[in-house]
Length: 437
Image (cartoon, rainbow, N blue to C red):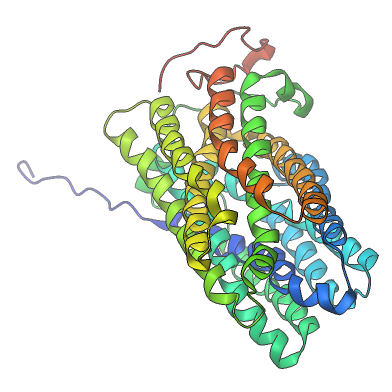
């Protein structure tokens, strides 16, 4: 009948259910890795660890995390996110629980090493899932949301772990938080499919998800990705900034204990404050660049402007070890953590801005290796510096300057976020170019 408007099928929003699963997986991931940091002052007293001992134990995690990243992205690109995520989450959950069996520096180092190998699969799988389920204009927001799980995990840990440790002992804290991760698999395995194969994704939502130009055909060998300056830009950003996040995660409780006398009973509120602020920064950083793009900004301008704003907000953290008030230090570190996560959400999104979905997991794996190696260096360095200088000043000075340095390196390597030319075996461009997006 003429004059009757056509019925437009509603766009389903099932992609946000998938994003919620990524959020909870990342939360579990960070709870498991944060348990040791929360318990560090207690375990240092019980086992007589030196600052260097703790640095070695923490560095064992980040070394394995780095090694695991080299394989994780490749493995997930080959087997897919459904299987890959399941394998890695099972490994890290069992490794987290295995900390309860440790009785020495070597034992804890081995448990941390196994945990690092397992946890290395989380971000390659999550970023690849976002690339599969979201168009480019929504990816920074989706990444910011699931990445907020890292902060929620860091919040949950100081709320739950002290209670478990004080009630049933520190070993119970490792077992309970570790095995809880297996519950996530009961939701992931039956729910996850790729968008085109999922019965709950409407045709309108599928068209929305696939609204970007198609990826070039064929596969790119993992080693060939190292020829692209886009890969090195992402890896350099991760090396310089992830190291600072590792420092906050593993050393914040010890810093508060050494500088302000905070113990297991009182560490909860300072840690919750820092990582709650980080949660806001993660979502806010992703939202800001996505909002700028919706107003017509290019991806290059939107991402880098947001990252610059975050880097400037981090600078005041250099004063954290010098202030007298405990809560002044907490707020300075909290602001830096929030800005870190906003920076990180956009840094992750650069991979899907510059690379096709088929290799996003591999690129994230390479960057994750670089970031974890930064964490390995900073954990060893923090232990040595603290033991030999008695101060955290040098670490916070590095924390304040790392992000502006990272952004400068990224901009020099990819001034316009030109997409990597992978198709047809063409060599990477010798000079930056490509259209603005």
